[in-house]
Image (cartoon, rainbow, N blue to C red):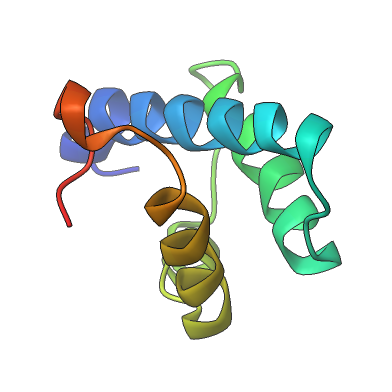
Length: 87
């Protein structure tokens, strides 16, 4: 795995998966999004020595349907005031 992706990518996965897990307790998420939550959790909390498929990660993160769903979810969250996400 590319060293540049190790720390920031795992942190990003933790943030996204934890936001979506919290949201899942309050609303219905699509099966695709729930699958991605599980995947991101595995990535975020995987042991350092485990190997991840970067192509799979990039395909999931670039999935247009998921991206559209994230935009709807993130638009409903008051995160802009914390500077976590920019719209």
